[in-house]
Length: 612
Image (cartoon, rainbow, N blue to C red; front, side):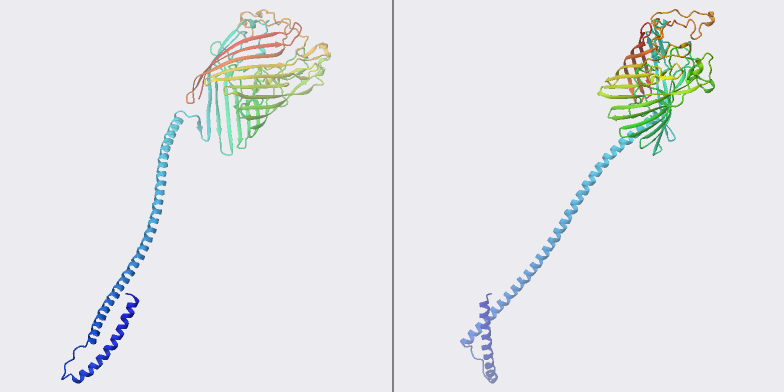
């Protein structure tokens, strides 16, 4: 309904109301007057129109009211619809929020499920690994119980060290020696032994030992013992039961800190001996020869001492104090001095060996540097040589009056280098030179000689060794060694006593070498059959050269060797075979009659079983 229609209808209603009220009032008055005696008049046209208009208005009003009611209903429905829409929107928002929350929850749950799946997978993997670890641990424990790598005593780990050897040596020129070659005793052609060979079999280089280790925390301790059977007792022989005695090789104790400082005391390889790593004991770079005396040119000692070492990265500094001993050789020397004496049985020394009266230990210092597999070292040693001499021994009436002690100082320098040339080859060089260092060479050339007045004089020495060790296969090693040692002629003209005018010292040029190449007869028995079998007596007394000083100038040796490991297993040990060939040459200092020479061809064989 429009506004104009509403206004028109309102005006009609107002006019109708006013006209109706007027008619009603007039009619009432007339009716009231004539009610009793007169009927109501008929409608006039106006009245009929009015009535019809009124009825129309009433109908219109009813329609208006219906329309209002409809509008009201529509408004109510619209309001209800709006309310429902708002409720729906709120419900939709709530549903959206719930959906978002549910989506987040689902995402979180998905992540949790994924993480759980990953955890389960990891757990399965861990379980598999744990099962493998348990299996491996069980196997390891079983192996350790059935075949332990070491023996455990309280907090100490004991590792056995041993090999068992069947060895032999053939020498073209006999030395009456086991697999240990006395290089400086190789006979000149004038000796009967130079014309006979020897073949000796031996199991004496078999070795027994053990390493003891403890690690209480900030410190570590170790002890090591190693022995073989290359010692000879008073009753040792090869007539029936080759009863050679157990020989101490190494026996030392060790204390170390985690900062790299170590102290070692006891019998061990000298600090002069080349090592493969730092200056650590038990890493000595020994020639891999069957010969227990190794190779000419190799510098070493095994003797009592105390060693101090400090590691700083790849560098190690070390110093040691070691047992001293003197090797002496002189010609035309006066008997106006002494160095020491034969061993005292009561002092548990060998009655048949000489011992010098030493004034101080040998002092050795060394520095090493490890660079990967390469190893370099350099050092020096100082030695003191003392004797007691008697200047008045040369008088017409000899006298001990004026006897005094005299000390001379010797020493030298050494350097070693060892490096891999390729994966299959290692190359090494060794040198030691100085005065009075002959004892540190494997040929044991002399350290000192004597002046005419009875005082000592150190002899200049040097030792050189070159090594080439090849590893063409895992089971095979091929080794090549060449070494040489030298002792300088050291002589003095005597001006005292009956020896005045003679050269005194080591290898005088006036000494006779005329008989070094002339073979002599064996010593003639002097006491019948009673002397047979006595050591050094006939028929165990080959001829020795007459008029042959033959003081050694130089000894050289060339060695080739192969080692083949038939079997090598960390559980059951190693079985190996080796063969060595060596050519040895000894050259004497020239004297009257020339410079004597001697050579020897030697072949060694070895079959060894090593503990794992």
